[in-house]
Length: 455
Ligand SMILES: Cc1cc2nc3c(=O)[nH]c(=O)nc-3n(C[C@H](O)[C@H](O)[C@H](O)COP(=O)(O)OP(=O)(O)OC[C@H]3O[C@@H](n4cnc5c(N)ncnc54)[C@H](O)[C@@H]3O)c2cc1C
Image 1 (cartoon, rainbow, N blue to C red):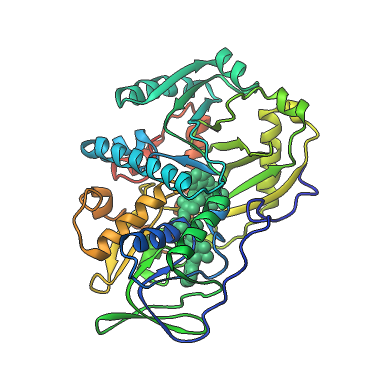
Image 2: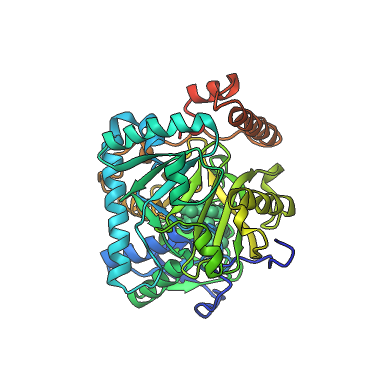
């Protein structure tokens, strides 16, 4: 299936906007944004909408949407806490507010897309979580109640109902959520945001890597490869990449996640899946897949392997992970035997120890950062950008009052300890999946310290 797949990202392997020139001389900015993914793009748009006179400059080391923004599955969630269950466990006293903010955030994204005529195939079709191991059935039944208790449209489906909806022999049950997110073409969204930001007067420089940052009087001096920027304020939106603000690297674990995209399914293949609503699907478990159809009926299939390499090394090509995905795709949909993958790629997930983003300031409040969405940032990045702008403006808002915004996560240990600890934890999670979800002593210890994920 993957022999002929191009080692490229499908989403960006399409005609897009012309490249912006790199910065080659000194310049100034009222607000400098470092990183041209969703967080940086939202920050640029929102800052300009709030204050059109603000001179906003965005610099990107590669191309706009080079990072996770251009490589993701396009699941767009209304949760800013990596899911209701996780958020409720971490911040039980704030979960209702977190949910409300998340819902408003998604509604604002949908309104922005509509108002600006962005053709990003945004469909708020909800999602389904599939149980593929017996213990996940009970977990999803419990999750149905939890979602309903918080006013969400959740329906538990037994194996027969699941398989009638989407024809996979792997399903033992499922949870259909409606009205809580959906799917988007991430790069068409990013390119649409780029157009809006440019119309608002944001200046863009691509192939312009920031190499450091230092306070200088009332501003911040930000060297890039070919030119210095003197900025009044800086928003760091570099996600899983080594940050120009070095301290952030203690909190972010760059984890590789891999994806396959098939050729467009023919009418027979498409019909063989059922899947009338074409909603996004994830399966349960600590190691999970996510999969979805595109506007032209390709199947995107990703996840399962989450790879952290020593000192954060690795690349967006990992043949063994792509081969495993191909095998799992056919186990999920044996009727697609013979389908070809046209693209295979990987991207960096910015994992934090608490699985949610974090925020803060540096250099006397002139620099703020928003990062660490841990693989669920397509929607949450707008919230992240707003929280970052709040911090720069030193204003107290509903966002900045949240514990998630005020408190940092537990840092990861440095190398050479980091890799063995992460690997040990990864194996413990795989053992829990194989052991009916039962978490061993190591995971229970991490849980007690608020480290890890509660789905
Ligand atoms: C394979 C994969 C699948 C995913 N699937 C989903 C999904 O289905 N749903 C979901 O909600 N989330 C998903 N995510 C996560 C989501 O894509 C991210 O949370 C989101 O895109 C983060 O946006 P960002 O702008 O913060 O980071 P990024 O998009 O990574 O942007 C950071 C940018 O900063 C630039 N940069 C870094 N260092 C510098 C520097 N020194 N100078 C200048 N520029 C710099 C980078 O080149 C990069 O373009 C997925 C992620 C991956 C990798």
